[in-house]
Length: 498
Image 1 (spheres, rainbow, N blue to C red):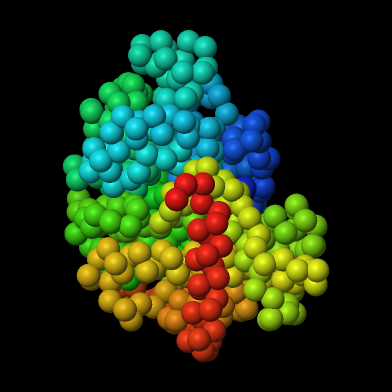
Image 2 (image 1 turned 90 degrees about the vertical axis):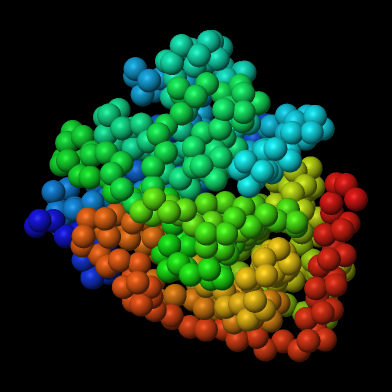
């Protein structure tokens, strides 16, 4: 094999990226393109699937051009994607019948409440590890079938395909020859039994989803199809797929039970590897599939924070107090420490451990002297406080999570030293920032590269993981407890229900 490069397609919530790695796992080139967000109604979030597709292809071609490579120089493709976002398309033409409904979308809150009130949530949680929340794909699919003319009848006839973004991209890349997904994306749909890693008939019946419209579920590292030559210019095998948070877990080499990672992007997603143990949460965390490799399933506890970097984007785009998101840490550092200002960023509800879809954002502790610096600090601290809530819940749920946790972090926000020091202070635990921050793409690339025989196995990959910097807690216990008490009070005032 002369082709030695691995291409990672990282399809995110606001942009698509393509990252080329060489056989030494070094980044060679990056292509990235943003695409529009659509907000048809309050609480609704959509993407045009054609925008996603075009941004992916543009990013791949851009990366290849920057690297001076051709598609034939790529040995394998790994795909990682925004999870829970769902697309429905025509099986014959490949054309979507509706905009993609994004993971942030809350339009199915009433349906979820109706199903909870009818007593279905215990069964759903037992099968899927998830909760009945608009976050997940299943109720979004049901909404599309119920609201697009003739969609349900066409689905029953087998004319439509349902998929998360990975499935849609693979279908397009392979010219409609491959209709597959991986175990991690399947586990986020409300339709997959995570014990058997298969579509569950009772769950499909509950949401009235026809099974023939769902893709085949495969391990994260394996054969997902080969790209049509007309798409990229060469037939390239797709050998790795994982949802973005699981891909980041892999990219952080969190292969051992007890290892913990948190990704700070638009939202924040913390995963704790629990190994072969499927741990049931008593604190409204999610039990999910971390990865499936070689036919073996590894589980994780996950806490999902809907708003992390999005809070900084709000400061920039909504309040106009930042020109660039990277300025937030320096601005927060100028804040008046005497002011106890708290931002609870429940712009689209609160995720774990509260799962309150109807909560909305609030700011507490404002005074006449509160200004941009205090708001910046409150926004960044809110991410740290929410992470602390998740970590505490995980420790309560699983005895294997000892108190000496080291958090491995990634995502755009971790470039801020101020934010990472604040995180270590609030958690009272070390925070490790890796040398390669593109851990989500790196995880997808490893799945493909190891399968292609170019990159090392799990053990070798874990040994190569490198730390850029460790942040140790410096805050006094008294100050920490004061801040946490203020945060807990602010959240209690924000919840829509007791």
